[in-house]
Length: 266
Image (cartoon, rainbow, N blue to C red):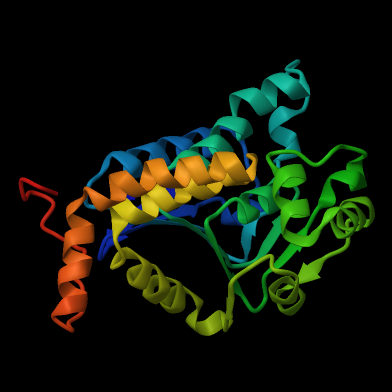
């Protein structure tokens, strides 16, 4: 395990877990936390032993949003602050060449809600909740919420959630499509690890290309998506994972997509 003052990181079975570590503040984000999380994500992307990244929170909260005391009186504009901290973090998550799971263990509010929505997979504890809290302090949702949320629930539901800033609890989040699974609080960490290990056993190169294809398709036309699929499919088909998958299918055995990271063709 490695630990900074604000991020705890450990790796097990190809899964790098990054834990926001300001539990006394419900993991409210300050500059140190945001920059450290971005750096840890980039390090995980460069580490061939890491196949899946999990972002979660220490204590009772996932992330209570911006620590307002951290920005009070600094003289930095809102735009400057977002461009220096939150926006690079969200771009890093979406551009990461590995699946990112946001494991929402408690409240995710404001920019913490944006972070919760930014993962490729969103797993929630039963006690977790999400609040688009920006309107409570007369601000606009940021850090990707205006992009993620309407694509998940539609414009009108997204506007209602943002305008009224009402808490969404786990069962409703699952129904609305804000998360993929809800687990009991007392087994949440184990359930997240088990899910992440299942994902880590899948073909890493193909999932990287799949993420690229989905990211492109979210903002492109059908013709552009078809062209991108054709381009990426060639990259997938030329990779050893494809050969392994076909061989396993023919031999009626489970495919083995995890290879020694030191092997020449990894």
